[in-house]
Image: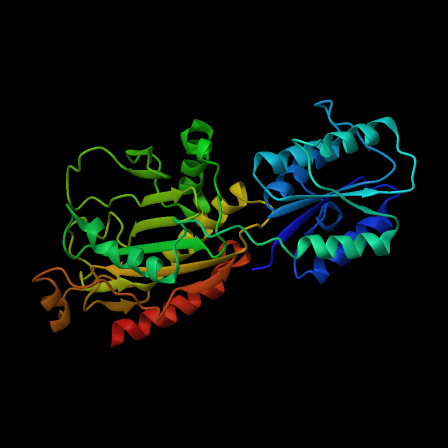
Length: 389
């Protein structure tokens, strides 16, 4: 993964030097994060730039003649960006232009970042070419964020998926359930741990789960958000009155970006006991709909928490419980008689191993979460083969 390096400097009249910084960063094999590269956004430029800093692995601060604009805080804009990097413990490299007359604010900033105790060992430059060379040399030593112990790799993701059977406790052994697990390839803190305790975050996740476009939880279902370790968990807290009542999805959203969803594949009408649709039939339309819903829910959470695509590539795995011997059928219709497959009857004598149709977790990107039709189609192809084998 390429380290992402934010370029902090004044912009107006400083374009040749910002271009030189970009050249140096790219020559060092890193990715420049620059405000001018981002499209028009719905928040203020100040917020957007601070979020870009938070989405980076390092910051380079370039000081020339001018200190630049002052933010509402009373600090220079570049000073706020530098402090944001400090707060997030990011590496900082400082470059100061020689041979120019600085204004008072620029001189103050140079003195501040050059403080013998709290400042940085700075490098100097005179023109764009010398800045590009200095930036390239400095950025070579910057690495991407170190791996986080909580970030699951492909093997761990597969283990999470296969644990779907554990979520069946207290439910019928043949209840059909989809487990969806997603985690970023890139290690790091996707959600600020302080957000987990924020009622506004709880409301945002619940709203996403209840959104009509990808409803995983119906309005009125007794689902309560609670913090469990490093995750916000949405799950039914009230005692179950009837095992045939369709349950809501169970959702975990972790600080490090893991999203785990156990979604039922049967509706209340499927479980009502009217006996109109055979229990061994797996509704293909319903399965596609649930897969679409979990992708779009994950996309909503990532869009809220990581709008600047720091975590752009992700891994996805799925598993199904209660489907041993099931038969996929498109738009199943009621029937008066039917034959139950032997494989389904065998599965009813005890819990079967969950079905993990993918040979390995799939790599997806953020666009796949927002527009999952192609990925859902691919997953359905794997599922058809797995159920037929």
